Length: 167
Image 1: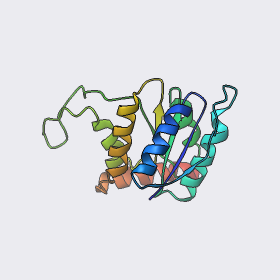
Image 2 (image 1 turned 135 degrees about the vertical axis):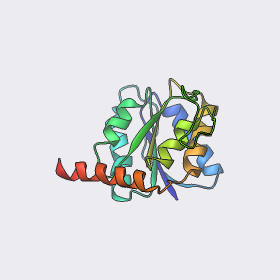
Image 3 (image 1 turned 180 degrees about the vertical axis):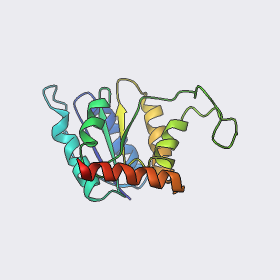
Image 4 (image 1 turned 30 degrees about the vertical axis):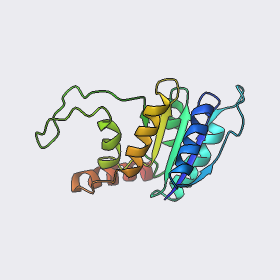
């Protein structure tokens, strides 16, 4: 699997950490920048490149990083077939019981669910809201978690694709 990454100036340091981490883990990756920290950069210039590649290859994955991650996800989600989600950091679910009635208290459950239920193909991180350690753990979980292929989730993703085509 190839991973595509990009950030803005606020996410630059975390992007460099993520890039080194992914390379050490043996992932093939392409970095769309920035290649130096520039407080005057504009995140859409970098994020759109990741989103375009993932849009053309929806089974590939992208990681985008900004100060809060929201703008980056907004840009990415403008591209057909992209399902970008934001991760801020671990949190305990309010209702720690899954659909099978099993108690869960997994602070990274949200990351797993973005893959299992939504087949998210871009992970957006808010560098001002997540520690490096938590970001790397979330990325590992996100990359290792497969889409569940449960019929209701497949159906819902197909409905999203249909909405994109009718806009």
